[in-house]
Image 1 (spheres, helix red, strand yellow):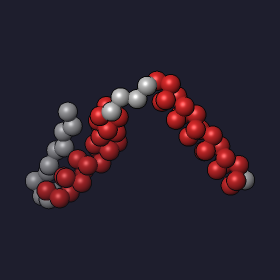
Image 2 (image 1 turned 120 degrees about the horizontal axis):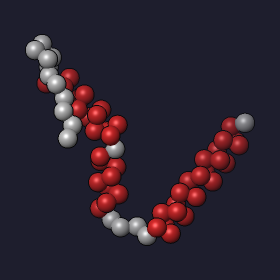
Image 3 (image 1 turned 60 degrees about the vertical axis):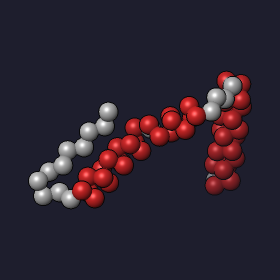
Image 4 (image 1 turned 135 degrees about the horizontal axis):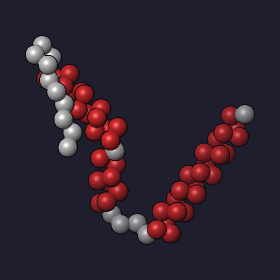
Length: 63
């Protein structure tokens, strides 16, 4: 559970911004999206390999 402390003089908008940042950093939304649909382990590995190849090609292009 994510807890955001609101100080006396702090606005609600500021607290909401802090909450959103904590949610993004914790990865809760990413996990929920991943759990929505089952992907086979072989497909997951293939996607990871494709992403790695893509990143490596981009890095080579930058050099």
